[in-house]
Length: 255
Image (tube, rainbow, N blue to C red):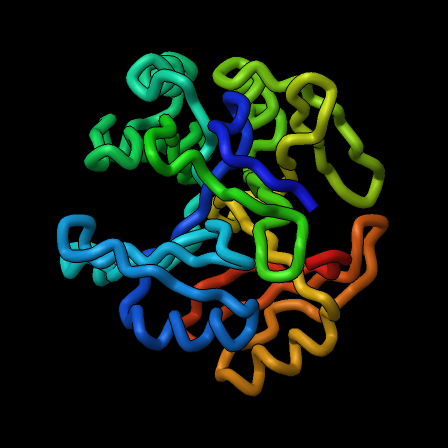
């Protein structure tokens, strides 16, 4: 269990949100599955819904703009930065693309949306009133983030150059995966995908029991995208909510 009320170190995945076609449906799904309570931030912030566990922010859901209706709904990972404008420039200098230029979100913070050279989309978040997740590594909260890329070597070089990660390659004959570390602590992961699979960032939410959570997901109209399996870090499964938004669950203790 991790509590934090101050800005996260630069390069740390600090926030996740999803823009969905039906916000009320998403609220019902995630509240039933993960125990979230959601606070509507009002019309000034497009009815952005901040999810909380034990009164602490863990994620957010917002309405999907009509102009993006053709795009699939996804969970977006935001990496903490101390200066969005400076980091946005570093992203483009390293071969990435800026999809949304830096902009203020009232007094909540400053944000930009970018893509790495392989097309994996991520956000940059400069803390204001919202510093990021305030609890993690418990059921209902964020546990892990990883970039799955069709250019593994290029991804390692890009993220190390932009965010200063130390890359610890854990690859074997069976898989290619690296841990991206900050100050000698794992911050997020980077894994290889076949060239035909679009690169993307993935999120992992904690649950008390993965198999029970899978059953609940099915009951709520969600889907299982991969059979639950054990890992050294907990039992996990690839799933999607009842609107097709993909995410991962992993068993954790605490809460």
